[in-house]
Every structure is written in C-alpha cells, then in structure tokens.
Amino acid sequence: MRRFKLRPSLKRNKFIKKHLLKSILFFFVVISSFLFGVLADKILILRSEANALSVVEENNKELVRIQSQVLKDKYIFKINWGDLGRRMVEDGVIDKTKLAQAVSGSDNLPKGLDKYFSGNQNKIEVNQENAQFWVNVLWGLGLATKNRLLEEGEMMQEGDASNFASTGGWTLGVDNPMTHYSGHSYITLSDKQQNTVKEIAGNIYRPCCGNSTAFPDCNHGMAALGLIELMVSQGFSKVEIYKTVLAFNTYWFPNTYLDIAYYLKQNGRDYEKTSPKEILSKTFSSAMGAEAIHKKIGTIQGLDSSSGGSCGA
Image 1 (cartoon, rainbow, N blue to C red):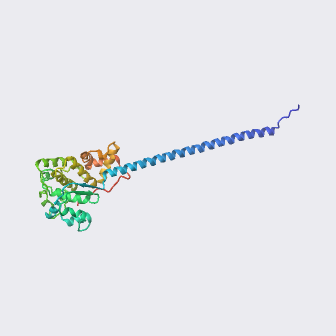
Image 2: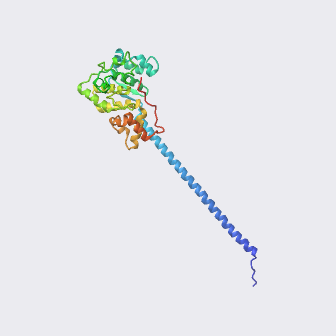
Image 3: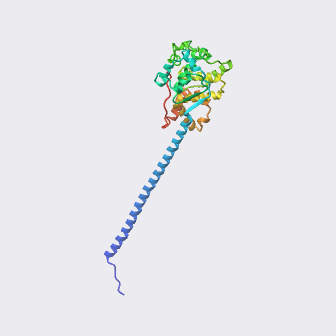
C-alpha cells in the first residue's frame, strides 16, 4: 500500500488552528475572569452601599427616637399657680406690656399666656412655644420671692447682688429690680421646706453657667429657683421636682439635652431611664459638663435643634 505524507503546509495549518483555538479559549477565560471580577466588585460595592444605607437608616431612626425622648410636645404639671401672676403685676415685679413685648413682640399677651395673670390657675403647661414666657415669669418669681438663699447665700458673697445677670438684667418690671429682690412673701416655706429648697437647688445646674441653682446668678437659675420654691411649698416630692425642672431645662437648652441623650446612648444607657437628678448634676448640666460631653460626641448631623435662650430678657 502506498503511503502519503502530509505536506508541510497542511501540518502548519493544523498547528496554527490548534494554537489559535487555544488563544481564543485563553482570551475568553481572561475576559470571563475579568468580567467576573468586575461583577464581584460591583456586588461587593452594592452590598457595602446597602449596608451603609441600612446603618444610616438605623442611625436616623435612633436620632428620631432620641429627639422624641428629649423634646416633648408639651408638659402639663398640676402645679397650683393660683393668682401669682396677678400679684406680681400688682406689685410691679412684672410689667405685662414689657413681658408681652419680650415674648410676642406686641403689647398684649396671647390668650393662652394671659390666663396666668387673671384668676386662679391650678396647672401649668409648658411647651416649645411658651418656654421663653416661663423663663421670664419664673425669673420674676424667683427674684422677688423672699428667701434665705437670696439674702444669705452666694448671691450676697460680695455684699451686693445687684450686678448679676439675674438681678441687674431684670428689665421686665417696674422700678429698680433690687427694690423687689427677696422682697415679697409670695411663697411661704417652713424651715424644713427651706432646707429642701437649698438641697435641691444645690444639685441642679444649667448649661449657660457653672453655678448651681443655689447661686442663681442668671435668669435660668433664678427661674429654676422660683419653680423649686413653688413646688416644695406645695408638697411635691424631690423626684417630681427634679423631673419637672429637667423638663423646663430641655426647652430652655434643647441642644444640651439632645447631646446628653446621645452620649448616654453611646454608653449603653437610656435617657428616659436615667435619674433626672443625675442629668441635672454638674457632670452633665453645668456649662463645663455640657461642653465636655459635646466635645466627646462632636456635632451629630440630624441631632441639632434650636439653641437655648440667652441669659437676658
């Protein structure tokens, strides 16, 4: 039988086809690997973005929860206000026109606020809209009510209490504010009650100052003192008084208490389950304490609120 040998050109063509096929397969493997890598990276990115969005959403929910804990729509306290408003106006401690101009920009108070100067009121409502009104009215009450803390306490350490923001800064009354300083018997306290006022006031701070309410050198301190005196005289418990003062403080200094609530959350604690007395302490509520906490948590996007009022009328 005669054998035929493949011609060199046929062998070469077969070799070329074989290597071309390998090259094509290799190319597809490389492309597939590349595309798979791109796809895998894309999946990882999408997962990462989804996780990030989930974290943001969860954080937003937490911030909303914190704000709902701190900034309530309103509080209604069964504190007997009685005719204190009318008496302070009659005595010249408060000039209603000046007060109205300070809180509403007009010469007359809104009906919802004017009621505290007519007749007897057996409850007090405080909310974000009337918080400044209560700073001013309680300031006048604390300034004018006769009390040993004003006469013998730190306000008189220099022998003259007229140059503090809470005294010299009182411009909402008639005549010189010192004519009313501890000058009216609006609230009567027994010795035991006076000691309770001193104790509670010494434990309560506000973030605009470094002093306790026992040294009420600014409007917020004097307002808190008036509120404490009123509640002690009516037999409220210490727990109720701390809780009430904290409620007023949250309206007067919302950012501070949002910071505190966030800080507590970061440390595994719940704002609503934390003692109001502790929150009002020097550690949290003094100017130094509030500043230290703010530095620890920084500015939290979405947690900011309107800043608190100034220490003047």
